[in-house]
Image (cartoon, rainbow, N blue to C red; front, side):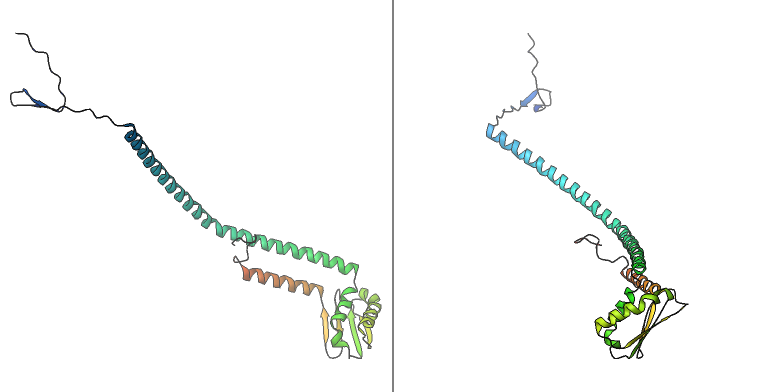
Length: 215
């Protein structure tokens, strides 16, 4: 008796208790139409795209959070730098102003006297006499300069200039009912003190250096 050829079986073959093949399921081959394959492909692509975008959005949010944290950490340092910049700029401006003022006083030593008399025109208009005390080097041309200014404001009183050896700069105008004193060094000190106080009060909460920015 010729032995029968061995039969192939797969994992879907069922055996009975004697080891014989009881049944073998026949798997039908399924053919997918082109439209269904294309629909599956597009769905898989869209799902992958959504997953990629979601991942990108998460990474973007993480990066923005890191940038925000870095900015928050940097803001106090930037405020300190801006404050130091303002303080340095103010000091430089004061030094430049002082140098310009000194040069102007050397060039036009009588100008502050004339400006003072112009500012006090209403106060001295009824005073019969105006006493001017100033350094000796300023007294030489003070009388002529004040006479010219007095004529311009219509002051009819007498102007007397007295040199004072102890005065190195500045002057005093005494018009009987009151007086006015100009001391360049004291004026510069007051300006410096006022600016220093303003910077200290402003502290790290000043207006931004760049218009529209934040301090």
